[in-house]
Length: 382
View (cartoon, helix red, strand yellow):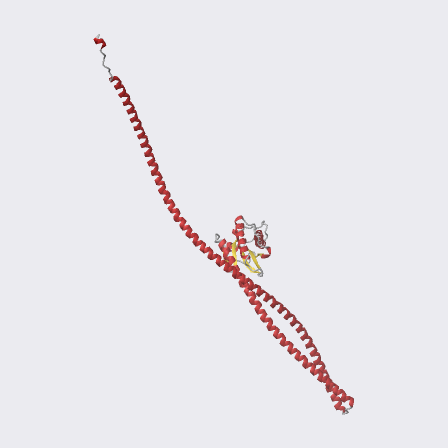
């Protein structure tokens, strides 16, 4: 009974082993989680480092581009400053030129007023001279008649005197008649002297007025020469601007006071219809002319003369133009009509056809034919 009642010792080892194993498994699992987290974190950090490296490279490139852009911006700002200064200088020059033009216009108006006054004076003087010439003719005719009458009276007086001497009978009637004849002779002599004085005065007056007319004519010629020089100035500016506007066409040239277009730039062979490229050139020409016309004084009666020229080869039978006269004239008229579409007044243009009769190259070669087929522009006065 004693042995039965003795308690058997408690065996805790299995439970401890189980608890330890469970704890060990938990620890292993935790370690696995830590290792996995570490691996994931390492992978993430590696990717971030690569991304940061790429971003750093891109930032470096962007910094270089930004540096270049800043340098270009600085250069452009400097260029803009230079261009702004040039523009200010150009605006000042334009203002000075406009002021000069206004002064020239005022001077031209004053000269025109003086010129009109001188023209009226010349007209009045010419009318007076014509009147004096008529009076001189009348006085000359009267003098001639008086001279004839005087000579006749003298002849009659001599005859009467001779008769009286021959008869040797001087009565009172004959003496009275002789005295009357002497008085008539004296009066005629006085009239003749007065007429001679009047003729001399009239001739001096005519000579004086002729001198005045010569002076006025000289002043008129000077004024006209000044206008011609002013028109030459605007012509030079017109040709200069036109040369700049059509600089892409080396075949277009300036000779003297003429601007020359080869017809191939405007027209097809044997045609007076302006092509598309030609219309663009005509538009540039019209715009340039309008700019120049805006600053030409209104008292200068300018025109743009458009001359058509062909080569010497005759028109082929069957074409609508019967001769080079008609072709050159039609081309000049077509150019006038196209210019009118762009705002050039018809009264400021003149169309002329010269056919083949004014060549610039007289040879019989294709090059000469090309040179002779041309349109000439001339800015002149009417």
